[in-house]
Length: 219
Image 1 (cartoon, one colour):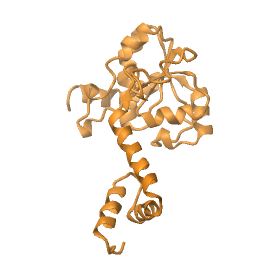
Image 2: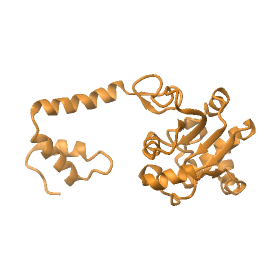
Image 3: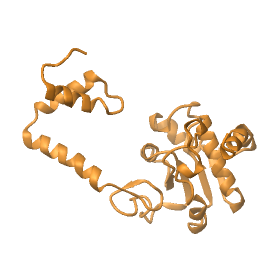
Image 4: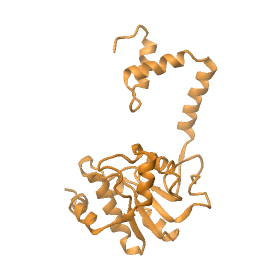
């Protein structure tokens, strides 16, 4: 992209281009659009972002984003607490909620086990899963993680943690292509994958057992 004539404009473009999926040209369009807005509108825009950053919280139970100690899902008495869906990120919660096909609760891991990146079980939000299963009398745990080595390894770790607790453990169906991100899957496919979930099978355990053992042993 050509060099712009204003240092302030260039700095604004550089700032916007740090956002995921925003290139220099898209950033320039955003900045030029904002320059055409009224000053009070820009002020409100900036204050909203700052307020979000300063005041946003994470649910003390599931790790979902929230304005209060408990998110709107965990505090909703109409949600089925006997079913818990384990996801990698808050974006996955939003994606599944948009399908209108799931009415249980969630547990947000905030990441996946990844030996290559040096991220183990203690680096994700997995420590309280077993206690939640016990306290909320959970009957089914749905593992809704992407079909990658990291996702399968994390799913197997969770399975090993709760398999003796008498809870049904299932995983979303393979309507989602291997390696695809849940957040980018269309609502129809994702909704059907939730509804058609299948038991966590021995074949899945065998697939990731060696990878998990290497992670546990620090190899």
